[in-house]
Length: 200
Image (cartoon, rainbow, N blue to C red):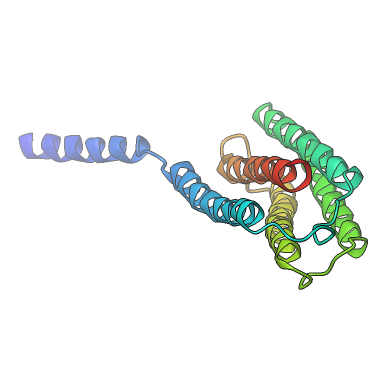
């Protein structure tokens, strides 16, 4: 009888440990984003160092238009807000509303990419004109890749959040939380990039 009780107690303790097992997925994602941020920091440092130490002759650095980058900044800031609303709607078990906010967020991301391509086609310099041009395309292109991946993930999340057959619910919000954190990171990187490339 004592042995049986001990076995039941051990099993109960194991179940309790399983139920209270800490979730380190967000922590792992944060570590990944820190590493990714260091890559961007390397690009920023290279650009700022090059600009300070090796200024190009007059006329070699072209003045950049601010209209499209400013619009893109507004688009990404709004998209962060709409993504947050999607999360709030899911917490309140309003999957259909959450899905709509996610689609709006993805649409803003796609609009950002279209605007960036439009800017590329109207820049007064090419990729290989000089080191400034190469750095500009490397920074904005690398960030554009992140926006593209983020937009694809948002579209996948919006499908998985559907009412009938969706895997993401208010009880299983990690996929949405992870993509939201990634998206806010991408938005924050753009703000820094905008300041350094266009305003500095």
